[in-house]
Image (cartoon, rainbow, N blue to C red):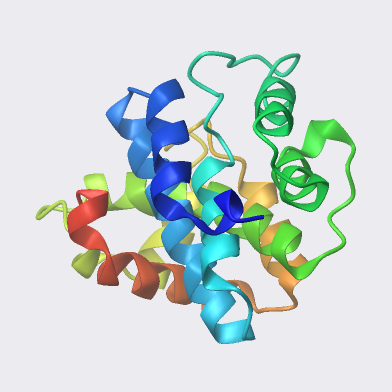
Length: 187
């Protein structure tokens, strides 16, 4: 489907439903890491990127587990997005019960919580720059249960395992991807 490959159209959908700057930056961060993995795996960067871009587009208006990502799924279905595209998005939320079977589904899940955590670690660095973030500082902060409390550490670990990539390597890969897009991400 053409719309699924058109970043501008997907970006317009994101911005129609999301005004919160932090949520927009989260979408861009997840997109950044998922696209980097698509490139690594030889997959369709536009398609993967747009799935990542829209994975939380409904969250600001529908933040409860009863609504997100279900409302977004309905909206995307009405707009003509394919079942595969929508299933990938649905699978990123553990509570939907949708198994992550494809490489895209596993990658989206693996990048979602981790990008939020890397962003939080970046914000406590003296320079507030992702350039200063290292794997060891991310792992150290993961042990601090009071830090970035909303981020599910188990999902970060499970995501790397699902991809079959060592956790340190996954963290470094996402840090490197985010560094390349730090202006857009505000990092």
